Image (tube, rainbow, N blue to C red; front, top):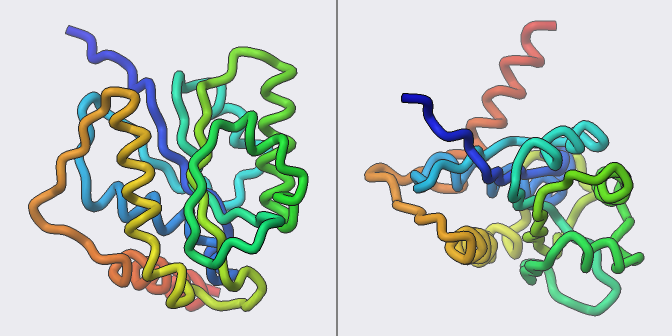
Length: 189
């Protein structure tokens, strides 16, 4: 019997080398390491794929994009926003980093091409996206559980059940895993 294809993806985007800019990537890995999903969900590290996200937006029926978001109001760092992609496209002030611009351009290009997934953006206001360091600021790290909860709520709206795994991984373990990979990659040069 053939297994039904996975219809839903959660994609974390951002650059983990610029502090809170990588919060979407870290959040995606916290999800992958701490939950099983029924029906299945592909949880992906989209990093700084930019325009290459288009293939994912066309491959899946539903996609949640996790990202840092720049907003024009005075929302404090750690504030979580959950919105359909069309609402994000209407937020001109969002375009403050290179990957934010690329995500929006990819959404716009996909809308023109047609055949796009139902895309939901779950994003958090960062504190620091300019410092070159891995990890998150205290304010973003403190509020990351709120971001995870928003993702789980969106999945539940799509009738997807998230079951906690028996051995949870803390955010610090996820960040440390990326730092270890970075150190290994640097030592191979």
